[in-house]
Image (cartoon, rainbow, N blue to C red; front, side):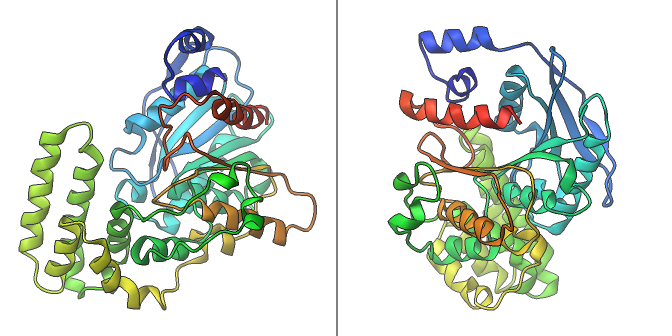
Length: 372
């Protein structure tokens, strides 16, 4: 409960008690971990007490990678609650790309961490993925080479099928959930599928650029989109710097030949409808690698925890429901799966609210994870 109180930035007596309950945390230096695709930056957050379990924590799409402040805050709070946390930053995710290289690097991180007796006394680790990394973490944890090295998997705001999410983001095709489907998750009655966030359609264009513009336009278009996304990521914290980046994105877009210029104009002016219409023909026939979607990959045998914002507008909570349905359909025996739709979470971060019952429910969810 202290972890949740600190995470949602609760005020008052509860907050004071929660701060007292927090243990001292040692933050290690940034270290390069070897992987099949090259070095991956990592940082270890350790409690001062002996480590029983280490969890690998993978951020979503963000240019700051393991330096991203919400990720650092979460790692600190988890470590203050007794869990060692190894944050890793697959390079593609820091460039806003969703690729199978990241899935491979998460698998390599599992092997590397589980082999260290100081971090994994029993040879097993937890795996936590945020946003699109949540789906990739589930795929990696289901691979035969590491399946027996997993203590648990947590997907926070993750996807079940990447193509279905792209269609939602670009075409507003989130679908509906009936009461029977909602029953697959705790808090399912609170799930709603809102209008998609424009951020998601822009990320979709970035990842599909090589299929919508001529080869010579791909790199310039991706550069302009990346500048826009970087501006979006700092807009809340540094508005003046973000404004300069947004202006640069418009300048870069104006230099592009067609069709890149028009597509970048849709990005700069947040015209999700027209951007979606431009991508619709491609999305109707797109074939993505199986290694990007848990629904199309081998299933982990370790306990699986799915946590989602009830009104997530980047990856809709319906993805969590579909994933639970899939996992139960393919299971050949008992499978431990717990899914929770929380109103205290937006896409991949906690909301500062004070609903004590909701906080208690979320605390119970995390208690079960921490016991694995």
